Length: 306
Image (cartoon, rainbow, N blue to C red; front, side, top):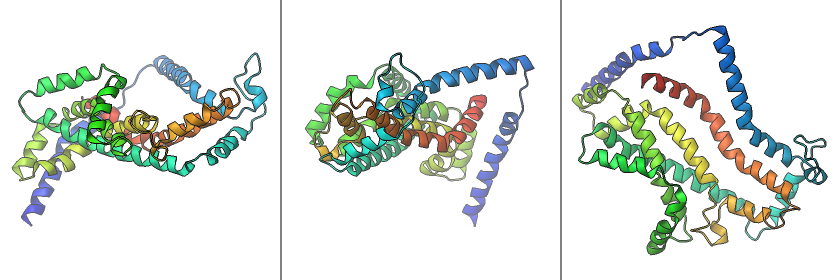
């Protein structure tokens, strides 16, 4: 009974602290009609420009063979067909390894690595943001500095480490390297900085452990951060062929299989390549559509709060 009363008091305190801020978020900021029209036009133009490569890939995947090489090239298709997608699955059915194996490998690796990356990055960011640990400024400076380097510079050190551990041609070589990506740690730490210390102190007074504070208070309040990180991480891992670690055909990922199909005959399979690009785009796009509403809503709130 006493623990239940503590839990109710803590929940009530959180509601009281955030009530005024949420009310502030619900306020509407008005601008002139001309300003609204200008902003809308800029957003429409920017959105169309960013969607152009996606539209072109989709349109090209529906072009018959004779329209792909027509000169001058046309953006839109006159006689759309699904032959490129049909040929893609016909070619993939003739591979040495079943096509379903590549799909399983990509789904398993992408979901496992993304989940572990979000959890570990959040757990590492929490003490950097809310605890006075020795050298945390230096640690965070190193994390920020690492964002300036592309991932390719780590390929040789990663390969040496994986070879020494005997993890070449294993799922571990695909799942473990993305876990330590510095972007996730940086993003989670920045969001956790915005959580009021009074909430954490109140929870500690009520006897909550660090694990309980992390999972019941910190993580729900940084939901926009780990949802956004989920999108970025999943997209990066899904599109990574990871050929520097995997040589066994049964462990290769879907992008590697698609690359083999496309490069078999570059000219004849150009349409098939566009169909493969659209096929690879679907899972990240579906994931983004599913959680984009929550991401945009919470990101806007966190931006105003920060």
